[in-house]
Length: 217
Image (cartoon, rainbow, N blue to C red):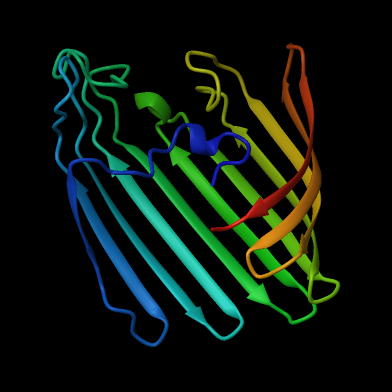
């Protein structure tokens, strides 16, 4: 959740907390987490947070959803908090994500949507992202993949650049291939293109290429 920036503002790991995961029942499972507003590191405070997630996997369908809230403490209340919230009445930071995968046999369809609210403790500073993709097995060894992602801020606060304002849009494409040499070894190749645009500013474009061999021990 975050190929184009949303992951840069969503803290999906809760430290110094407790969690409970339900047993899996008919493909369903759920998890609840709560993190205390403490940090053992000298000179560092932490904001309390809680999160819930639910998932289902059965037959060709798999679905998962996640929701997290981080309390927003001002620098006056917690001088060493990272990140400190912008103003005294800042609302809690909220993150939501849902993903789905469906196996058609001849192809696997995937999609996800994520939303972050009150980014970096700035009220009404929101960012959203969606992704879609497909995996196509050409043979028992070769799988071709393609994906598209789109994300944007509402202009109050940038998701990718701290302190920046103005609406920023991000878009990316990727294609790749994976060839299995054995149960534990495969080759892969791919190319991706990423563009970030902002009105009145220079656009950023990036193209990445990947080629490699992976062996799982």
